[in-house]
Image 1 (cartoon, rainbow, N blue to C red):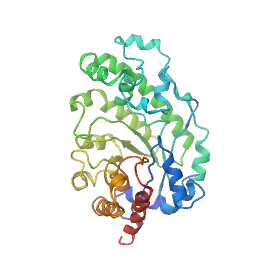
Image 2: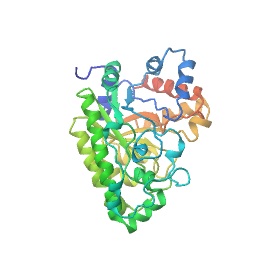
Image 3: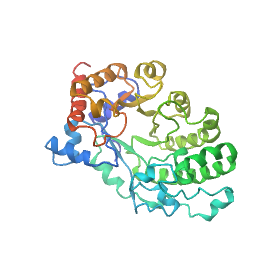
Image 4: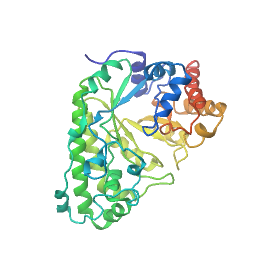
Length: 356
């Protein structure tokens, strides 16, 4: 069975070709570390389940991934490629969790570790998801978000990673090579399990703070650009769009992301330097599709319903002009965001459609 025509996919297809549809396509991004938001939304909308919630909010995209076969323990390399069981795995500090490569200096020493394969995930859940959600835009990722720089930091600690990028490039390249082998395996297994039903495949990495890049562009070119190109080309060989997640002040990287062949850049983090919607739309709006922008740092958690609606209107008018925009939060919803503000956000997306 191939892709099923639907209003959700029609909106998405028009968006990807920079055309206007009846409604700006939208996604519901609930942070995986706080599933209580999903329960609260289902209850607030009097729905039976998550599927009913998606219908109620008129969500166009369904994101999914294969299942992990076990939990991360922190005692082996595979743990750092599995979904994190707690926030320690999301910190790069060696004080939070032992970094298994923190004392490695010689690339040859990497052979002493048991590097995982794609078998740490179970892909058998994918066909059922594709069938159940065939009317929505289907967006997969391979188990986790699959970063490069951040994964080296998780394995080594951030301080060592940054120092080795300057003083021990052979080690960084060797670690990256191991990571790429794993990602290619998991990407292919996920893409093959999806067959011809998939619309989007996503991965990501963070290279910046909210003020700017964590290291010079020269180092990004040296270590990350070409490995990213390899992954993008692999995904595109399956005939799907590529979405790339990168938080913070990524403006200096956007042209490179486009050059690599990335189709969707997400999320727009509006409080980061240079990430205002006007400039992004003016400089890059015809060359890529942007996703996100509705501020989870201030507007959604602390604003009024009216302020949330105003922000949705602003992004819809600026970023949604001439298509090329998927409206969503600037990161996953956490429990500090009032349910009423989430509902106001998606109701306002519907209201915007009346003027299109």
